[in-house]
Amino acid sequence: MRVYKLTAYEPKGKVIIDDILEASTDEEAKVKGLAILEEKKLLETTHRLASPAGKLLLFHS
Image (cartoon, rainbow, N blue to C red; front, side, top):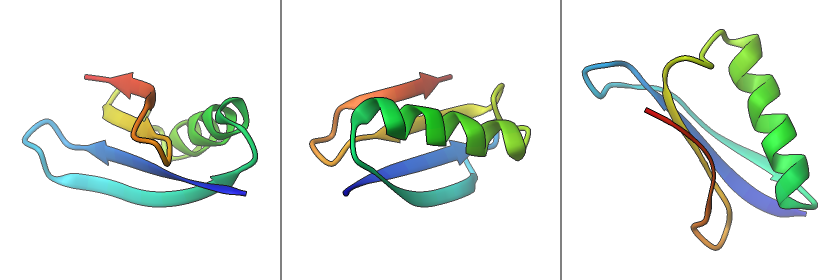
C-alpha cells in the first residue's frame, strides 16, 4: 500500500483536514479522497491529494 496526503483549507488558509490515506494505486487513492471530501462536504473547498511522489491527483482552488 502507498501513503497519500489529503488536505483541505478554509478560504483564509486555515487547514480543515490533513489526512493520510493508503491505497494500492493512484486511481484508488482518488476514489478514496473524493469519498472523504464528499462525506465531509468539502468538495467545493480548496483541497489537494498528493501521491507519495508528490504528484497532485486531486486539486481544487
